Length: 323
Image (cartoon, rainbow, N blue to C red; front, side, top):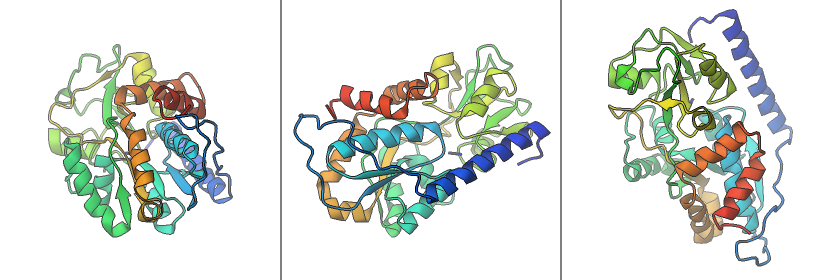
């Protein structure tokens, strides 16, 4: 998930985001990542027995949902006795793969179709079938000594979103888009196979002329749509602002977007050391993460300003994964 010439204001916004991302990387490399102490108990109330093995370092790409997902997996793993650390990347999948390669991270909440298309250099192999997509993804992970565990029911794919009062208010499906509409969102949208590039190929509609490069599913894009600075926003389908504002997700009537189910990707080192116990437990966590639940958690984190740690803890307790 994740140009052209910009106005001074957009240029400043892009520069600010770049500086923030750069600072995040520097801070991360300076040891600002925290090891999670156990805030919860095992689901059956028994004592936590510390696992003997490597620390699980959970990577967080630079958009809000990753904070929530990292805490969901991390807190549950801590309650099960694993030592967990969180690693904010300050960027996206390119930094994630570099982190896996260097051993800085060994666990990532990923998105099946998007990760497949990143690794296969946009060959268009991802489909709406999660089983086929996850199977194909694993063929690209094998040479990297990585393993994809079971996908969650939750799907968080790119979505084209409009308001009920803006210029595009009468649109219901993506085939109704026109090049005159302004689109705002992820900086890599012009080349992303699930954004402008894919829309042009699948729908024959080129939205590049009025594209504004903003942020990754974050406040700049949300605010721009709220204030009619853009007609259409590219957000992720579980963004809490969609729920809060009752915005409209345009129907992907030609099937551009693939099976972007949440899928944990882990190093083979973790799998080999901890065996089936860890994999089975992570699969139990994933099985509880539905699209509706994740959208609600994102809304509480992004809009209600509840800490990611707290919304994750409440979710895990309600799902019966911790006490």
